[in-house]
Length: 401
Image 1: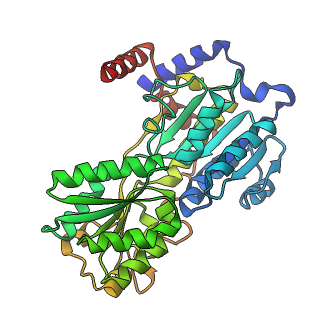
Image 2: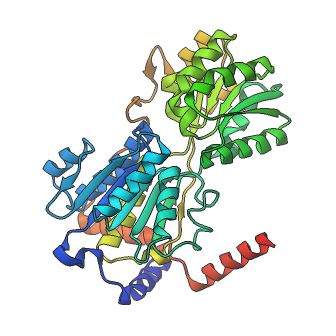
Image 3: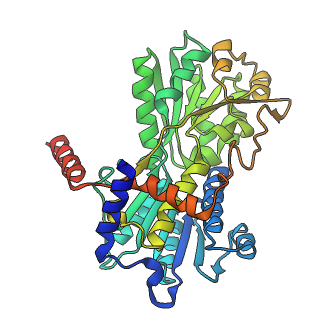
């Protein structure tokens, strides 16, 4: 009942808004912009493209082009792809280029790209719509102030990294663990945020955290060796692109210095040598949700200024038993008991692959009418009422005092 009421409110809010597909030519230009190509990005992109195809916005031939991350001049959509290759200056250029190419909507994947897009759009008189995904800290990064307090052209879905569930895994492995090490890149908001959360939660569990900052991948070997020299009993990696790309250097250095467990907040890192990976679940679904917002925006079914930032819980734990054995680390029964999947003898216990490291990465079978009804009902639950906006603004003002 509430969903139907909110759908009505959403349509009422749209009485003065023109559907995006009704613009000149009837064919909007969407820019899909990513910080770099990773398996996490691939999961979200699959969710986005599955939805566009399910709605008939791209056909099978066009989907084949998009699967190769190539630009598309399609029958119903123009799609511009951008990849910054994990470079901040390149990300700025990428966003500017998408705007120069007439992008009506920016679909930004990652915290850095979403932050850059939001900052650039704030300087524009007529900014494009921005829909973000794979963003772990939208408020810390200044992309939005609160779920309903944000720029009117911004919407998105937050990948809440479950540090509250991640950090206790250290004690599940070793109840007597006292000192852990963390590596942080101070230029990456998600890395800084994660290190702060890990430090706070670890201290509450009676552990001390040694934090070592890095600037580039080249710093990771020295940072890892430094932490080990300080007697850390495990190395914990918060969300961050430097540690993700440079994970092999961390794994190799840890092995050379006696082999201690490496806990990463990215589950697929177990395929690249981490002992334990624990992550938000599911990134495929995050892509589906972002696409729900995009498609409803394009058809004029929602006003994104009234759409709150989505947040859904989800947690998965993976353990690389091969990496643990090679490092001489005995995985505790308590830690094994909470694992959703493991790797042993090179094989996943749940058929998860390195390229798409999640289960359940297909859309539910339903008719287009049923899908549209379900998607609008989902988005209706994100509707920001005047009261919600006022309450969140008041809470922010009180925090600033």
